[in-house]
Image 1 (cartoon, helix red, strand yellow):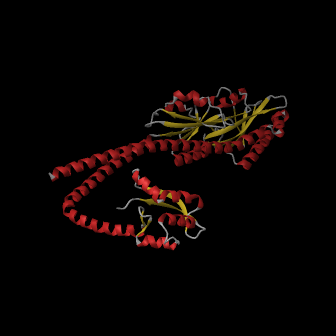
Image 2: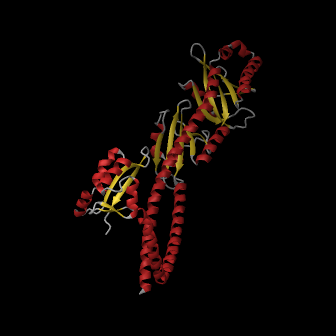
Image 3: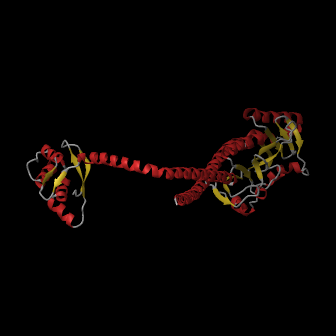
Length: 445
């Protein structure tokens, strides 16, 4: 019989614990998952904003330098001087010195000039090559001549001797004479490696993927790709369904945030935040996947299950031990309880004031001393009640206090079945400083 009761008790406790832990785990999982998704959105948005402003700052200077050179009257005059061009040695030396002065001042990896009349490409080291129209490597030059923009930004290999074809971001600016005719192209270049390091830092700190896309969706700069490879981000990420949304977003003052379906190489959803950079004509795309988050939360669930099992076993062991020892301890506990109850009761009633409502007078020594201390020792209880009210209770609470605890009201409430009266009021011991007090009255027979 005892074993059966023990089994039922353990089973009931186990069921309660399992249900409790299960509900707690479910609610906790949902709350943590939502909080984690909110955190992903915040981190991605902040990272996007940080990269956006840093890249704008980085590119603002080379763009301004290139535009400054393109509008330099001395350079325009130099390109327009046919007599100077005929003296190739002197012309090349002057061009090289001009470009080198900018390279030494701003430390760019590339500073170049192309003459539209001769198609010759000059670097700060001198004449490098001639841009023949049939060479695919020179197509960038003919593209900018057709472009309506004053300048373009292109990621390409640097063909200048000694540059080892390193991938470089070039700012290409048109040079126009007073009549608006394009007489050359000038610009500067920065190695992509330095820009990749910036993205690598953000990706490591925030666990995101950062990409710069052109208007065709080609990755211009990322930690793994450059515009030289002509890699389509939407194809490699499996996000063709959001191509138009991202490439159509041209608001530079705000981000476009999108939750996408499962990506090709991840588990779960991906959060994408994109912003347009008009100076570069690029789209900054920040992607953060939930796969790692889901894996971490699964590990937490497995850990919680293990902990639940351990707790249940521990609780069952304790309950079994307690029940087995219960009978032997019951008599002792009852004796102790009675002794303790007696002591607590004596302490509890030590400060209780007793009143004989039917006879309208205090009952008990402590109550008589209390009334005497306030000058109400030789008068009936109802009169003493008013004396106490006038001496100690704040004026706005006096009538309520007296009306609540008069003998007539107490007896009336008792007959109506209300055996407990209560009143909250403000009282003072020195007549100046008041504090709240609650009095409860009940029958003692």
